[in-house]
Length: 314
Ligand code: ADP
Ligand code: MG
Image (tube, rainbow, N blue to C red; front, side, top):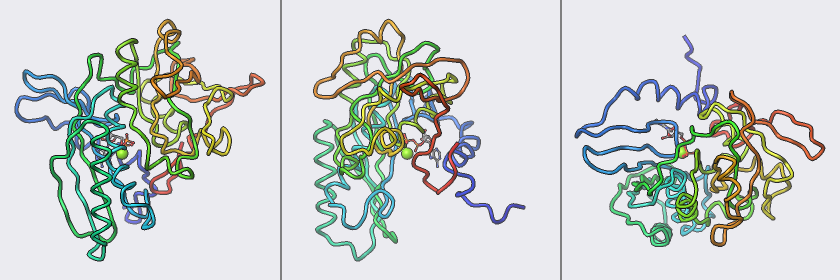
């Protein structure tokens, strides 16, 4: 018996894998189909006659994702923005969301008002509706948003489609997101993703929430190709403490995507205001992530990123 075993030792990946094994054999009602289940930024469901829809949820918790001092509006903005980012990552367009709120009874009413204004502001900027939710008592403030997305003309784009020879790109600049406050004020990149998909065949895409290094591992595991990133090419945000910050800080909510070499030459340097940077390529079959230094040497890139339960990361 492993009575003492906790989610700390199991880790987030282990926990999700355990859930996946127990849940994947369930099929949806109403004659619907699961086109893509657990393991990507959002699930892809398809109605009996209809178009595919995207479904995802993401939660923010006091003491983990924000503190009592974080402005309520920023918390509300972030709760919607992280979800819209998951829809963007699939090449989708945000449609509508519901929000569940857990609050200690001592929560100032003014906080809730600010939070709701933050939700509404982000939703308006994403052209999406907020159509319901739930409210319960909780030991600390928690907000969970579930989002529905529509699939754009060339989507959905999964994490698992990167191929040998593909080039890797990221939007924006990475690192220092917590330090700069960007983690709670960012603009979800769904418009940029739509522009990209209209022009080019994107093979794989995801949003960067756990830090570029760890999310490269996530894409590599899903696609079963080794991803090599050139350190000198990684776009570093001014608030990040160097390339290491850009690789490991996390909460960037930028897009990481892969496409073939011919399409790679046609990727614009900017999508609107947003810079787009080529950072590397898929160099071999099999799972792996490598960093190439300016002197040409290559070494494995550790996943060290954000560990939810303090677990060791591969
Ligand atoms: P993201 O960082 O994009 O929000 P996560 O790392 O939270 O994605 O989740 C990875 C995948 O695992 C997603 O497909 C998500 O739906 C699924 N997932 C996460 N937690 C659970 C859970 N407790 N039960 C079932 N599926 C889960
Ligand atoms: Mg999540």
